[in-house]
Image (cartoon, rainbow, N blue to C red; front, side, top):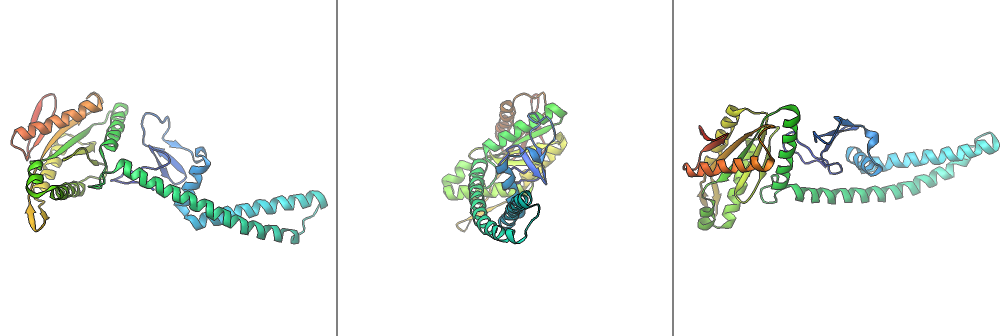
Length: 298
């Protein structure tokens, strides 16, 4: 199973790799010396899992059983030829039927077990990269993607941005309306931000009431415009909880990054510092962090 947000997809067996038909493509710009890893490099377990995902359990059982029948028939026919210099078709019927019966039962149970293990791993994978409340990516996954984007910037000279979105007066919402209302606000923020997401962007819940965008290949004006749209969308997203309307705003901090910006930690801190500056300037605004903090039109 692949987990997709925009154009990003992640395979369970090969973290950092994505299946494209009969090849694997790497998403890790540093560790892979080539863009494609050939199909023959997969191990047997990965091959079977890929076959099951692509063709289904029943078709996989049929194919594997057919291969077994062909092998058995070939061996018996070969032995007959070595002994008698001829092949008696009647001598093949019983072994073929037995191979079909045993093979189908064995392969069905084997492939069903692999599918069950695969589904269990999918659930564990989802738990490890997703936030269970808002159903968006979590902090650990987001940091991993920033590291990959930084590696891409170092290799290709690209630019990307980190946007930190922090809900204004979130503690007051919890105190006034209760924590379940606060959860509803968090879910509304996540849904609104996801609806404004570009195909190539990554969005995650970073901490309690703070969310993060990873925006590849966008200049300062594009990022400022995008942040302004998100800000207005959140301002116009009321939450109705227990027959009561809850309105909220958010503050957004932006850090534009390239290969010379520094470490991932410094980038995240800069975006967080820009959020703090936005709070100090009255909230419900966008602040862009560069060499020194500057304000963007909201």
